[in-house]
Every structure is written in C-alpha cells, then in structure tokens.
Length: 147
Length: 81
Image (cartoon, rainbow over all chains, first blue to last red; front, side, top):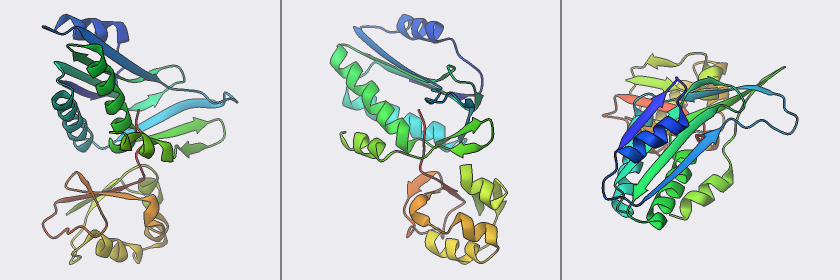
C-alpha cells in the first residue's frame, strides 16, 4: 500500500507501470484519475487544494486498509496533490490490484466515494474576479452510503 | 491545546492555528467560548451545520469530549478527489 499527498505533479503512465510491475499473483488492476475540470463558462483559472497534514494521510491509509481487507486486494496506490493546479492538470489517482476485476473495480469505486467526502481536502476555484470554495455535494454522502 | 482552522474557516478567522487554554469540556463548549472572542470567530462558527470537527485527527461530533485532546480542527465538509 502506498499513500502520497504531494504538491508535485506526477506522471500517470509511470505510476501505473510502476504499480503494475510490482504485483505478484494479481490478475486485475483498476486505475482512476481525476483532473481539474473547468466549468461551462471556462472561467476557472486555477484550483487551489488545501489539506490537513497528518490526518489526510492517516485517513487515506485507514480507508486503503479497509479496502484491502474487504476486497482481498494485493495492493493500493493513492496519490493526491495539493497547492495550485490549472484546469486539465491531474489532481489525483487511485490504483487497486486484485486477483479478479470485480474486486479491483469495487475497491476503487469505494475509495473514490470515501475520498470525496471523508478525506480532509478542500478545493477553491480561482476565477478572474473572485475565489469560491467548492461546496460538498449531498450526492457524495449518498454515494458513500452504498458501502 | 492546538486549534486548527482550514479552508473558509481559516479565512474567516484569519489564522491557520492557535494555542488555546480552555476549561471547555466538549467541542460545543469550545465553540461557544470562541464565538464571543470577535466578529471573525462569530462569523466562522455561526452555522455549525456547515462545519466539521476533528479531535486529535479523528472526525467526531460537536458533543465529543475534548478534556484529553491535544489538537482540535474545524473545517467545512471535505471536497477531495
């Protein structure tokens, strides 16, 4: 299991290859990546991501361990960036490795639902004339209840 | 104890963290104590339904005990991913 909360960009292909290369007896790898989305007006110049050093890493580690146990995963990788990011830039990625695909898919789905509303990250949209803290969506809570 | 503020809570109060000596027994009591300090705190804590709290880095409720706590953090609902 590997958790990284970092300011620096990461190379998605390199991370997937590295994660894939270190698996033993696993048959399925699922990856999810999130990028900074612009809105319909296209007026988001940057996204600022804040986090809670210490708590963020431990909360993600606990969720990763739960997913490993529940879906018998061989490995989990979570990378999440903080700081100022531009539209189109990678914010985060998750990779899960399991013997069979369903477990890898479910674990990645769960980890994303968890990350959305339980990992202490906060996003702020920086527009030309103002900044707006992104509000949590009630759907994220509904999604988390699925698990 | 250390009290930490994140996102718009930090912006409204104006500082990321501070050391507080308090007799408050619960998170709720601490909030009541902070609210009377200034308009900044009052604005930040005006609607607790818009806030989340972590005691020693564990998400918890506003009636949680803070008597043994070393670190309390206040922040809005998380928006990761």
